[in-house]
Image 1 (cartoon, rainbow, N blue to C red):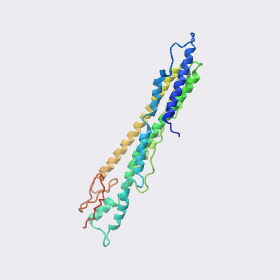
Image 2 (tube, one colour; image 1 turned 90 degrees about the horizontal axis):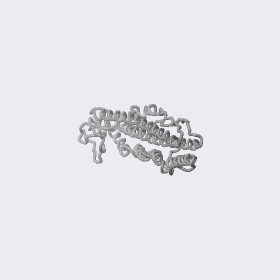
Image 3 (cartoon, helix red, strand yellow; image 1 turned 90 degrees about the vertical axis):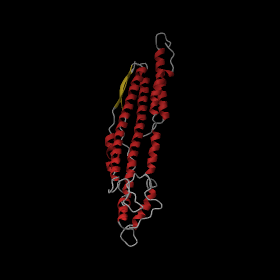
Image 4 (cartoon, rainbow, N blue to C red; image 1 turned 135 degrees about the vertical axis):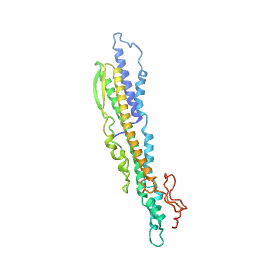
Length: 307
């Protein structure tokens, strides 16, 4: 579906203002005196012009930049990619054969870091994709708002043109408003991502957000001004529909945060196999360290301790 540009919205506003101006001018010059009772200008309709231009803010480009950044974090060269090969190599010298690192420390390192590493990375990517799904859905809501503004404005412009000389207009139009299917980010990695099934936007968001908000535009009024009042009410209804959908999306995202925080609490518990944060090895040979993952787990000078 074609995106609606700022220029298209501005043009639609100008077309409506010009149509209302011409209609008002014709009505004024049609009175018995044969002259306008007051000076008429397109500036008289600056308020409705500004109201229509509200569709341009907030602009979805800001959210699009955020989505692009999140996409890059999930690519092969993104999240944790620098450690993937190193961790894979570490697994080869942990074992029971001669010359291999073995013992309790080696076993803990393998169990709590090396073995869950890939799944933890996939789950971190799933968490990022959950946020990106919310971002993409928000972008679609803003685009839907623009489309419905344009439809409402162009419908009103046509009604104004038709109303001239025939005593007003009355009609109603169903708008295809805000029935956005949740925009799910790129597919979850096939290697694991056991967290993904518990994240509400990617797992159930499509059901929760896909039901459209019914907005009907009533086109009625004995004058161009009456038609403008009807339009303003329709634009208010569109904005409320979008606001309700954004609120639903925010609620789902809050649920996502709860799921992720719960998993982090699990990961911080000593003796548990992590889902999101691989436990760091202790260079001094102690048990694996539970951290918040705020620095590189494998330092350049890390040397496996001997048991």
